[in-house]
Amino acid sequence: MNWQELSEQQQTVAKVLRHAIKRNELAHAYLLEGLKGTGKRQTALLVAQTLFCESLSDQGPCMECRNCRRIASGNHPDVIWITPDEGAASIKKEQIAYLMKEFAFRSVESGRKVFIIEQAEKMTTQAENSLLKFIEEPHPGTLALLVTEHIHQLLDTIISRCQVLSFIPLSDRAVERRLAQDGQPKQLVKLAAALTHDYEEGLLLCKEEWFAEARSQVLQLVQRLHKSSESVLPYIYEKFSPNFDNNQKMAVGLDLLLFWYRDLLSLHLNRQEEIVFEDQVDGLKEQMLSLSSDQTIRAMSFILDGRRQLDAHVNGVSVMERLVIRLGGNHK
Ligand SMILES: [Zn+2]
Image (cartoon, rainbow, N blue to C red):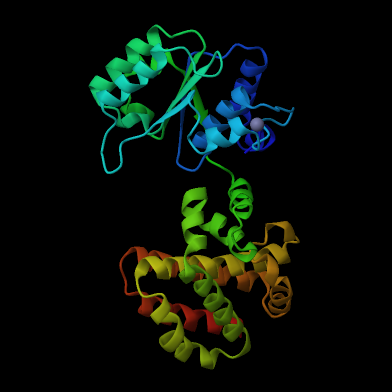
């Protein structure tokens, strides 16, 4: 991530940090807090790289020099990452003691040292108290970046001594952009963002083979509904239901189906930019001709009924059975 990308997603955070770095007015400690997937860890990395990069530009660190690469791989002697030890539930006092020992020496290669504590809420109270002393009497040139999804689990005394940077949830569009940057399949990123509104969850979904299959089955289902409703029930029993074999999966199936009809409605309303089945516009346009906007809205309300039944633990196959009969009737 560079500064431009950060300011598209987290405008305030980017502004505060960039300004402070430019004027050489960084606080001694920042607390980066907010939901999972909002870019906190990447921001900590960006700050560290900006401070140490050997060929910094206006865009930010080059990502290619020795320092940028060593920081990214966790091997820079003046940038120390602390996380709970593997398999451990907490960050222990000994880990903070190690940090303080490291910082008692002058920085190895420059006037600066940065430490980044991930999942900072997992510090034990003793660890937090050790850290507190350290933050209260900072060594010149040191910067502490604490990262947390659960700010309220930290001691008030820690919070009050840090400058708090709150990360806001990403917009669907920002989630899409990040998933696309990660090389996830184009036809899945928009759906995954619309379903989860969350980068991490969206990424998990894109990586699941099941999800691509779910998408293709929903597309087959809407084709069948459009062409001949007789073939729909056998399709549900034989192909569809075995793939959506629990209510959680079936709920995703219904959401995808809902997106299809919502896309049809977007076409009716001339809001093509809102379509999530982007690569299916031809198919959508064809269906739009035989389904009025009223019928489309009715279809959406049937699907929402089905969603409610699933939430009330009605069996997924029964929900689907009833739903496709209603949807089929609506097409006539
Ligand atoms: Zn660099």
